[in-house]
Image 1 (cartoon, rainbow, N blue to C red):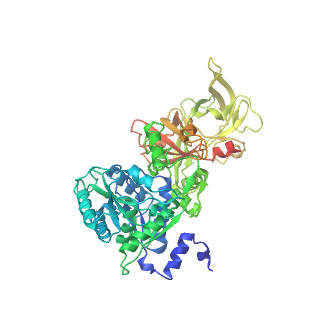
Image 2 (image 1 turned 120 degrees about the vertical axis):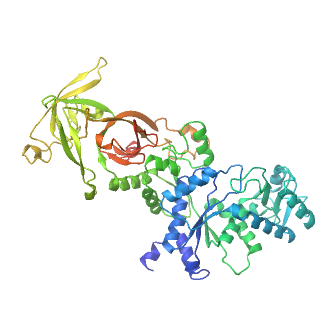
Image 3 (image 1 turned 90 degrees about the horizontal axis):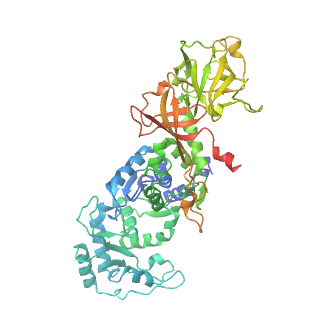
Length: 559
């Protein structure tokens, strides 16, 4: 077996086997079929990467198909958001399709099944139908309407289509087997009445096909070769095949449904219902809140699309569900941003530092690398003056030998600048330090080539000039849930695990080079983490989101 064969996941093995038996390579076609009833999340991102990744691997087209069969929950807003998300992830679809494209064909096929005695109108309530379904260990009970005549079924179905009946008054069911061990085969509903306008077809229809009837037939019409679903659809495969059996003509490609396990991400939830609750209860600011696991949220937070694709590739495809630590996703985010993000100096918790022996009217512009990982990124000039801001956490009056930042009597180097020594500090009436007074070694300037500039000190601090710094709002985001599996507690509601410290809003200062930064621009705040400019920013006010810290702070907590 070749190395390339060994690297195949089980879905790819299935495709390879099919290429040797039932399919030709040029016939391969995949699809990503979201329902436009909400925003896509990280689980959808994995499915997008799987389907479009297969398209890239086999040079095969991939359809983007909107499974728009429930006008009560679906909106064009979601269609537009989904298209934007797929494009942002870096993929291009071959055909943009909609289940609603096939409403007439699906209706015509339903008529055919009625005429063949394989579908009937049931006039019972939804509760009665559910009760008659039976249990996994007990067979169902046939509907009293199961043996209606073909003529009556056709007449009622046409009446449903023409809007003559109320919602819930009648449904169309497939006539299969009420004793089947698979409860989905116990005469599943194919059509129901929904009297709401559709985002594409308006008021043309007031009956809408169910997922199981729609999905396989849409695959068939589009000549999709491999219909890939998550594991909860495994029981649906039998019904998927039954519907195809009734229509397949042996002259075209027959789709094959196969299932893979969800990738559940730690410290989050992906149920649309639960995400909606977070929005409605204002735990988050909206679907694109940077703490949300939606693709919109990840984009706003500053996650690069390449990081999400690399994460999906690393996790791979499995047959069993597992909980993937969000730290793995954050690792890929850091890895990508480290290559691409310009470095800047920013202080997010400022403490004033005065270099008492530096001339009050002196101003220098020091050379600083934009990105040491990218030689082509060049450099910039950073202003240096007598008064600076440093991080409060970088100074202590007294500290042990393991504290390599600034302390009274101790020395550190200011990045790209000079070695300074802390001489004294000023406190307010509560004893909080408000200012540190230092002296500097004039000959120790970085890169000057003097013996003093080569002198080694253990600590290096970032800083910004108080005269030139721009004030910015800094939003420090952390994990939305403190528990790694908020969905995994039968006796507790997931809302009990919301992390109260998932967002801190603080005032910081940034160097003047980012004065004209635009929403979406990404930077590494040296020694602090990766940040991007939020869409709430204006020309008068810069707002930065922390994408990820430089290191996984949660790893320390777990230790």
